[in-house]
Amino acid sequence: MSSVYAYALGGAFLLAVGFVVQQHVAAEAATPGSDLSAGLLIELARRPLWLLGIASMVGGNLLGALALGRGSLTLVEPLEATNLFFALPLAAAWQRARLGLREYLGAGLLIAGLAGFMAAAGPARVARAAVPGLSWVVCGVAVFGLVIALVWGAKRFPLGEEATVVAIAAGILFGVQDALTQRTVDGLGHGVGALLASWQPYALLTVAVVGIALNQNAFKLAPLPASLPALTIAEPLCGIALGVGLFAQRIRLAPLFVGVELVSLVLMTIGVILVARSPIVTRVERRAPS
Image (tube, rainbow, N blue to C red; front, top):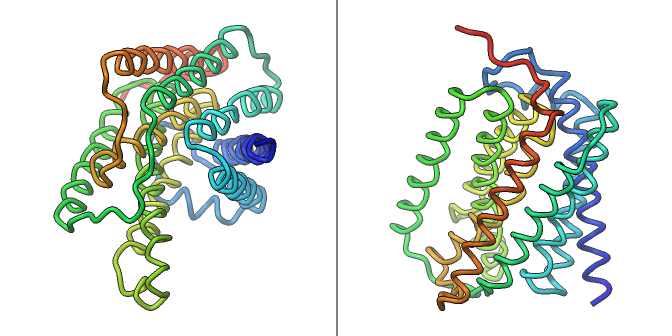
């Protein structure tokens, strides 16, 4: 069990370093303003420091995968969410700013809410659940419709809040990425040739690239506290929703458990709002009138 904590917390630290570095480089590389940039990812890929941040994030995800191989989802997901407690002070120090009780309380509520939700819902993976092609199509249309609506609607908000909404869209895509990764790994059992002949690896690559692009645009718009908390909860919640909707994953729906799940969602929402409205974020210049 100690190895689960070591892998999960080590992964959380590497994720935090990766996010802080990526946000710093994205903010420096981007043209000032609130417009999302489709070419931002290409610009960032030319910067060694940003690639170092991506490498740190990949390392964190690998350690997280090792933790999941040894521990339950309900334990590992909240442990990985502790990247907030590493990332927020690092980001504040980089900006020569100081965090207050508000930011730490918000991060604590978010992680406590996520832990409570995962413990109450008790999601359990169903290996190799058969998913009809039509279900994938319906899911894909619904997800991308939601992502497009979020990105379009985000433009109506000030920069800090826009970053939060765009990060939610990115987190949703990362949740889809997790689901596709699971199916791709399962597909390896049929051989590499069969896997390459299927659509899942290419969908996985597309979703990953779009998700990273949206995430970097969220990082560009405002300091890290505006986007990271929303990203942290959107990914696992989307993953659970897809698990239930597509993979016949079961969650607890007894009244007591549902009550805890609802309270946990409220705690997560309050946590995101507290951190996203940090003075570090609200100092960002508001959108100029068009």
